[in-house]
Length: 65
Image (cartoon, rainbow, N blue to C red; front, side, top):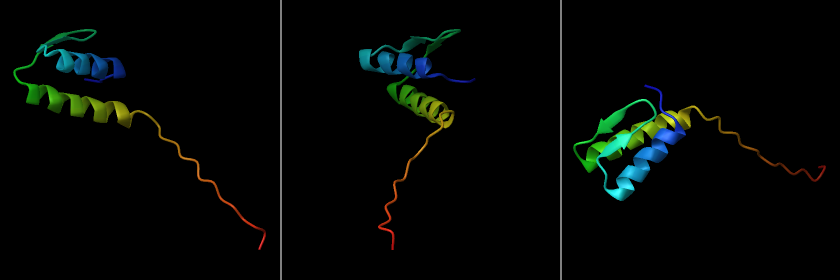
């Protein structure tokens, strides 16, 4: 399954409210424990962050020497 930021946000909202059932766009999931929810959240966040491109800008200075 491919996760989205919306899925991550839904799961975070459920964790914060104490809910064990999360309704995603195309399905419903009932978690047994908070630990299971946190493990799933970590997996989701890794997948979502892996799809984002991180760019870095490095500034350099030269005094002409």
